[in-house]
Length: 370
Image 1: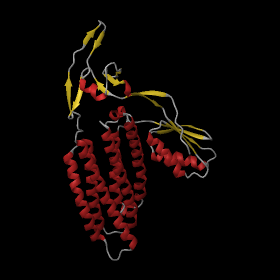
Image 2: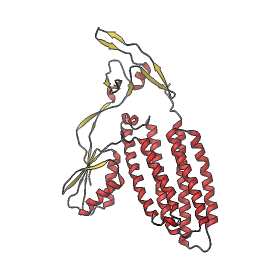
Image 3: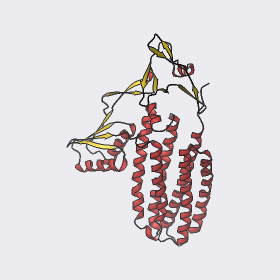
Image 4: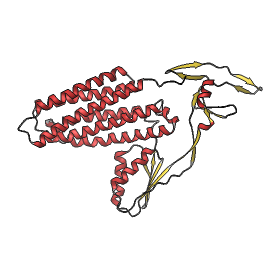
């Protein structure tokens, strides 16, 4: 398996925005500074640049800047050194004999996450079943990947960015709704009508994975190209780091929900009293997770603090519920399933608490250079 990068050139502009007037951000408050338009030589209009901005971006006398007219009639002023060429990149994966199908899919996903525009899979003399496995894996695990060409020897896929139509925060909200629903439904498996529900909950984990990979790709691209950061709805590279951790925590909540559903399927004979206790613990865990996501999207530190405090209640509830529903007549397998199920519910709350801590961190403005 090898990688080859190639492609046509395109330009990416990264820099500071200037729209008629010069805006300087200081201590999270936008200070507007008005500057007069002057005429020089009879035909040229001139606006001076703020000294602080010139110093920050490292401009010197006679250095050049690019002035780009934007669709909304504003101007984008970019230091020349920040105009860089990037390739419309293509990765090529060659399938070798004896290659494990899961390994191939993992490598394909890694190039997707890295931000490649097209990924070509050289199939060679691979087993035809491998072709179907890759198609199905792309469909189940990834968003915005289209097979645009397929021959007997290769599959060519195109990765669409998608962040304009589905920005990061909106996609994260959808991802969290699916994960929270999985958590609630995972314990519904314990009820009389829950037979068969476990498999459906486990299948939904693929949908969460699709969002996870899609959003991770956005963040990886944004870290390399600061002009994308604003396009996906964030304000700085620090936000990218925080949201990467949030995505992982949300993905882990879905993983635990799938695990809870699998264990609950072995415990469908539990009494209604025991089932109710597990449901109450799960409801508390979900409220913490939901509140943490809301606190992040709203940057509400108070809501985040409340979610963190409530996590202690779930931890205490785990020990109490375990003591109340475990019984000597239970088999070793049943005891293990109960303990794993309660641990998964508690871990979901703890991941919610982790998200709440990140929300608090992001409410604090970054220090400004003096």
